[in-house]
Length: 315
Image 1 (cartoon, rainbow, N blue to C red):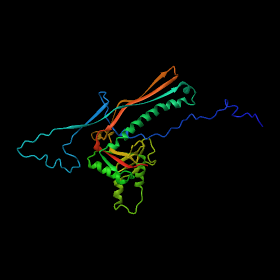
Image 2 (cartoon, rainbow, N blue to C red):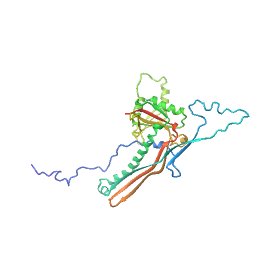
Image 3 (spheres, helix red, strand yellow):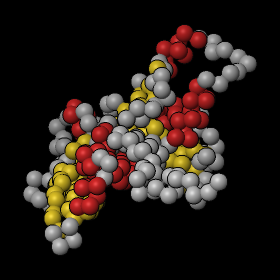
Image 4 (cartoon, rainbow, N blue to C red):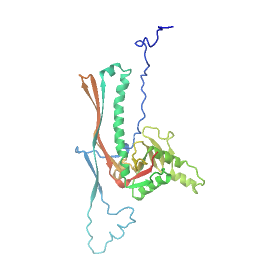
C-alpha cells in the first residue's frame, strides 16, 4: 500500500525525541590541591606577593652540625663577634582568570529546562576556573628541592618512603599531604597490595608504621582523597604535569599550609585580589545575556625545602 500517514509525514506534530529536564554532569577534575596552600592575600593591592623568611645561622639541617660545631664557642673575657640577622624571600604573582557564557533569549525561552541551564552556568564556571588554578599548583611540584622516584619506573613504596625520609631529614615540620597523578596512585596502590615470598620479620611493627587506611571508593570523591600512608593523606589528580618528553608524571608531597600553626613552614602559598565574581551584561540588540565569571589569584613555592617532587613512569 501507499500514502500511509507516518511520523515522517507529520514531523511537525510528532516530537523527534523526549528531552529529560534533568541534565547529567560531565566528568570533572578532582578539587585539589589549592585548599592545602597557605594564604598570603596582599593588603596593599599589589599583584606581586613576597614572603620573607629567616636565613639560618645553624647551617643546613643535613650538614651534620658543621655550621655549629665550633662557630659559637665562647672564650672567657673575650668579646663575641657580631652576627648579622638576615632574611631572604620567595615570591609569586597574581594573575586574572576569566570565563564568559553568552545565552540568547531564544534559548532561555525555548529550552526544555532553562532553569537547569542557568543553575549550571555559575557553579560550572567556578569549577572550571578552580581547575585552572589547581593546574598551576600541580605545575609547581617539579620545582621542589628534593626528588624521589626514577624516570620510566613505576612508583614504589620505597619511593614514597624515600620522600618522607628526605623531608624529615631536611627539617620539615608539621603535617604533610601528597598529591599524585592517577598513574602514580595506581602504581603505589598496586605496590601496597603486592604479594611476595617473604613476610616482614616484625609484621606488627610494619603494619603500625605504615598505618594505611583507604577510601573504599579509591578516591572517587569530590576532593580525590585516596588513602593515608604513614600519617600522610594522599589525593589523586589528573592535572599533574608530565616530564621527560611525556615519559613520566610528576606528583608532590609537601608541608600543608592550610593549618595555621604550620604557616612558618608551609611549602606552597596562594593569594587572591578578587574572589570568584559573577556579573551579567545585557545585549539588547543581540537579544542575549553575557554571564562573566572572573577571579584574580596566584600561587607559588614559598619554602622550597618543605616539598618533594615525586617522579615516576607515565601511563
